[in-house]
Image (tube, rainbow, N blue to C red):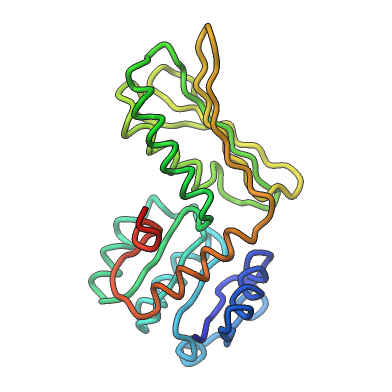
Amino acid sequence: MNIALLGYGKMGKEIEAIALNRGHNIVLKVDETNAKTITDADLKKANVAIEFSTPHTVMTNMERCFSIQLPVVVGTTGWYDHLEAVKENCLQTDATLFYASNFSLGVNIFFKVNTFLANMMNQYPDYEISMEEIHHIHKLDKPSGTAISLANQIIEKVDRKTNWSIDKHSPETVFIKDVREGEVPGTHIIKYNSAVDDIEIMHRAHNRKGFALGAVLAAEYAHNKKGVLTMDDLLKF
């Protein structure tokens, strides 16, 4: 399979190494040094694009892939306010979008655990619910897309929570503490605190390899399919 990397930072390089190890070809690497010179013909050399750029460029990259029928796997976050419009654009153009706030197998297991626990804790209003997410100092969006996904799962299952916030504490809000330090690849902690005890669940990534492998597996899955795809389609938990 021929892969175009839209974004060639640390994640892009991890994805490249795993893709090559799995027998794929990297036919295009796009970063800020060459982004303005890339043509549609360059992109069409690929069977699929993997997009890990920035929240400022991801929308343009997705739209361009849709326009030339190039399946695109998107790991960049910070654009989900436009998610419904992007989905509609994908379907109208008969294109392929595989998006995920996190491609790690471990994180997707964590999503399932989070949903199960939130459903259980809906019965116990004495527990206050909050979250902490820690990432490297280069991460541009706050909170992380993974944290937003986790918070939305809680909101869906816990009647007393209706929204999330990074700056507001209130009974109806899931407060998310966002920390940016060092080169932390990603840590997410869900906290249930009461006067008598605390319950916490945590996922801590040790490196970027889990995210990169998931992105390559997503590309292998999506390159010959149409429509809007997610990790639920790939993993089938």
